[in-house]
Image (cartoon, rainbow, N blue to C red; front, side, top):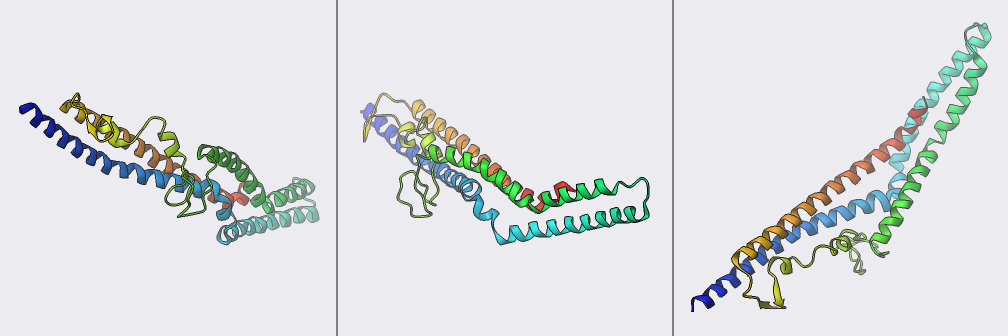
Length: 231
């Protein structure tokens, strides 16, 4: 009768809600892939980009500019020593120039080492969060790897509070069995609640990806201009 018809309508709405949540799940999937890929590049593979010939060449240009500046300082000290101008402490200037020259010419090593140490700690925590996944690019077979082949840390974390969106959207007493105890309000409420959770999580992952990407660019820039820090 009317009850059976209403249950059929609820079942139809339940399947529509499941489809809507399934679509939103792809948004979360994409955010998860991007987030893990950015961490893979900015943390695990940072050393490859640090030793890129372009980065080393740019650092070399900054280093050479500083070295030329130091030559002018030495020339100034030499003039002071020769002319014996009283207010020029040539010996102190030479000592400082030698110290600065050492720091400038080894600045790539110093900054690179500090960054690598911090990334080593971050990489250890990252690997543990991803279950020590063995990922080697797209097509990796480890279940803890993303489709793009990066260790997947967010899926493992999300499992703690998010199950299959289909189950959250439409509570079921048995797999494939619709429970008549659920009302239209519970179907819509569960669907909206899941969608909101997915959107919030996706935004958080997107913001995290942007932060790590900015960090990656800033660190490379810091290495390139590190010689200028000692002027």
